[in-house]
Amino acid sequence: MLELVEIGKSFGGVRALDNVSFALEQGEILGLIGPNGAGKTTLFNIISGIFPPDQGRVRFQGKDITRLAAHKIARLNIFRTFQNLSIFDGMTVLENLLVGNHLVGKAGIFSAFLKTPWERREERMIQRRALNLLAEIGLAAAANLPAKSLAFGKLRLLELGRALAAGPQLLLLDEPAAGLNQRETEELMAFLAGLREKEITIIVIEHDMSLVMELSDRVVVLDQGKKIAEGRPREVQQNPAVLTAYLGEDDWIKSLRR
Image (cartoon, rainbow, N blue to C red):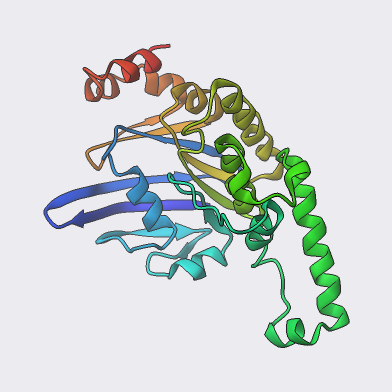
């Protein structure tokens, strides 16, 4: 489904990514790990079209999307969440999810202005779709509340729900468990595992190693912009290069050796 070929990116004199290559199959969940500054979010920015690479190619379902703008990549059903929450505070929970449906609807500005029967039917369909998704992520009771009134863990779920509302084929999750407690993380893990049934392909950046190792089919490890390991979670945990890269970072070493 997705193929990255020798991706390179520099910012001034800093080499953020250096010849990074890997591929994903449809329905696969890939964990992308590495210390802060390893280039993980930069890679997401390149895949999602926020900025192009200096070198290399990005292919999605066989099509070269390396230089496509972000809105055109979104129309290919590639969506992402962000490390820092990006919620519309002034909207309700339901309205935030409706924003995620904007690519699902086909009605144009004139149909919306004239409120044609076809446009009204489509609007009702989108409303039902959003309400069903709110139920799936456990936020149905909060549908009409201001988004800013939700606790942090619920906001994480809302952001994930908004990405799912768009109907992704490829979903890029940037630290979805950041700031969650143990119970919320376990609920998130169970929800993401359930997305396998929908055949949604996922790349997840995460510092919670228990989540990455349990959820992922494969793991790719970046260090200083380079790919230093790729394989099944157990293989990566035992990889000498990975342990060497994180030597001295106690939390990482302990989590990788579990």
